Amino acid sequence: MNIEEILRDKKLRVTKKRILILEIIIANEEPVSAEEIFDICKKKNKNLDLSTIYRNLNTMADENLLLKNTNSDGISYFQLNDINHKHFITCISCNRRFILDNCPIHNIEDEIESETGFLIKGHNFEFTGICPDCQKKLKKN
Image 1 (spheres, one colour):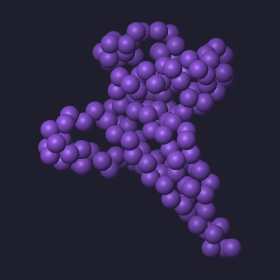
Image 2 (image 1 turned 180 degrees about the vertical axis):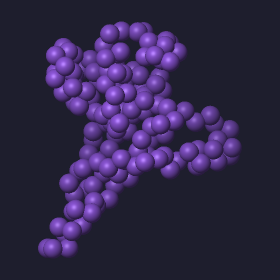
Image 3 (image 1 turned 180 degrees about the horizontal axis):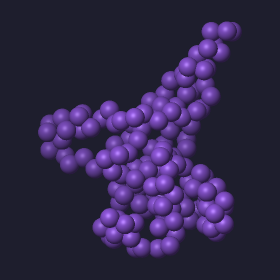
């Protein structure tokens, strides 16, 4: 399914800006913030306002096309809402993000659907901790 079909499937208007935003999200292997999309657009000489990016991201998240995760640092990260979505763990010391290889929630979703009768369309999940590099620094002090 191409990007235009994905947008039509969610009954969203197909615009050049939405196509560009989705191309950037799909090209990245990890969730991206609006600011990161803005920076990528600038590098590609694409004129897209940050407010336009936010508006489109939130519209696509409202329609369950994108997953929106807001971390404890207040930054929202977006990714395509499909079986290949990613979760990450954020270091509370240096704020680096590390991608987890798989979603630990899929089995739990099945149980919740069975127990509640809900059809789950997405989830938000955040891990935080202290990365190995920061742990080493703490031990030295």
